[in-house]
Length: 421
Image (cartoon, rainbow, N blue to C red; front, side):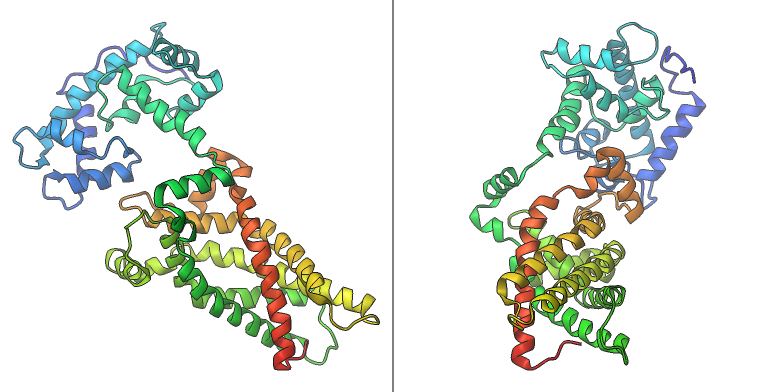
């Protein structure tokens, strides 16, 4: 599809232009009082995906608020956009080095190099892809204008700094390994930050494990009926139902754990303060944010984990019970390690989406993507491997934790005289 040359910016009285600005103003004016204040501006920028660490709306308000009353009227807003579009057009022509009405990846690369910043053609293509709406791998004036319309950029240096910060720099800093993540956490909040959220995790894990194992034994008994033993698929069903039951009951504590883990230093005074702030600012439904991907993930995880564990343990007992009826700690740890690994591989993408849904809910004004929306976002930005980001440290945490819990589970069954069904 051919793209039109930008030519000259249309006059301020252009009907299409006035209508577009008016619709944008109406979208920002959430309380419909004919005035956009800083709070509405920040929420609107976040909703439209235009809010960045360097642009929270204050620059737009300062430049556009002519009467200095702390808000923008439609007239002030359109006047600001008229001037801003004029600057954007000059920047567009500056980037369009061959003046063909399109910006391609090589022109972006050349513009970085002109400012002494070296980027690869692949990095330039990533920048281009973030603005290219029609898939032609070039940017026309409309795409350029719409992408930067609410970004307070003054000149080409600002544009290149914006790209460098949001695309090139982010692509490096987001690729954290385990040691890098630990260093960042210690730098941000000290050694204690490594145990951030652990209090609620300890409070959560006790009832969660107790409910899961109790439900598992009861469901196995109900399924078993007159059978002597359960088949693998029946253990899977029992494990899935037990995991879903436990997660449904303790899920609000899961949300609190995630919020406390991801909080900035000093954001919450403690567990109760975190719960109070969530309730006051977001309402009761926030305590079940991400529940759907969580329960969809726990069904295969708990089912595979419990079924594989008990199948491996019973297999060992059948082959080596003549030596000892007690598998021993090492055998139980090995069975737990294998079963939890299988469960994690099957369910991790859903667990990742659940955590991101919980995390995005904690950011005021941030876009609240649905489960499917997050899946699409991760796949488009990071590919299939993006669904398994962070699985290595998760293995480091979950494998020993689950394995130890199975050892405790077996020993407590023996101590309490609970027979295996």
